[in-house]
Image (cartoon, rainbow, N blue to C red):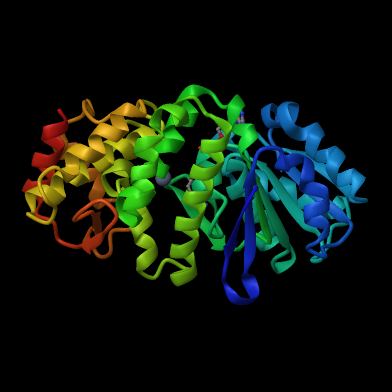
Length: 360
Ligand SMILES: NC(=O)c1ccc[n+]([C@@H]2O[C@H](COP(=O)([O-])OP(=O)(O)OC[C@H]3O[C@@H](n4cnc5c(N)ncnc54)[C@H](O)[C@@H]3O)[C@@H](O)[C@H]2O)c1
Ligand SMILES: [Zn+2]
């Protein structure tokens, strides 16, 4: 097991990474000094895989658990689901000293975090992420949200968890596409934050593709450490935290023009990184070859780097509608070399169009 601290003063917490941690949920949550009553939020698929292990561990530690089943995936992130969950928490007699436990992917985590942030003005929250994306990204940092018909993640709050238990053993049951999609965020962390980590992913690509337990634990912990270091310096996304949006400026636009149907999130981010790496080279910001190395690793991990299947102009249009565009100025995170980043505004549109055209 690897222990990654997140140092945020009074809101500090630990991320524990390792195989088999779900069975330790009871004793680990006991140490937090939360009330006896817990709400375990999960979806039916995850419940049938891991619900029993977690429930037994919690009951064994003396907790009184109310399980709330959420709809699968993005359908959990609605006001209706939040409202019915508040009702369930009230019925079960949970109060501010109680804790909400999220067992699942980023969707369960986002909804559960939103409920924990709002119920009685905020209660304890614990993340038990079960997807790669949730373990290396969504469960860390305290961003919680539900969707609005006009845009994803529009309604939410910052609410840090008290503890994150990332059981890397749970990644063995992830569908292949879901797993590879999570690897896009892993590679992103290396590209903009840490060349040594990028090297490690490159060197262990084959073992990682086979989900070998030891490498999984190291890589997940490495990503958690990198994301934690960003959160520690910029908890509420003032500026530095934008670095985590590498590949996402164009990636989100690709998801939007393809109706969130053609590409998994990580696939769109992979295409976004391939395009943004092209932008950096065209601006003369990145040394030649920086893009090629990124693209090579993404391809090795089975992620798409070409053929968006949409006109570049449509993608650029969607970019301008992004909620992160400040008064029409779209911030780009670019990588001058592997392991470093720069935030650049006002990238000329023709440069973006060319970089997208290069993907085909
Ligand atoms: N809060 C943040 O900082 C943040 C960051 C990134 C993404 N997100 C959010 O995360 C969500 C996406 O999360 P996701 O990619 O984890 O997908 P997801 O939560 O939608 O889960 C995808 C599917 O995987 C299944 N599943 C989960 N764990 C499994 C396992 N171990 N084995 C087999 N199946 C499993 C689930 O039942 C679900 O059907 C989006 O809503 C996104 O907005 C939030
Ligand atoms: Zn992402």
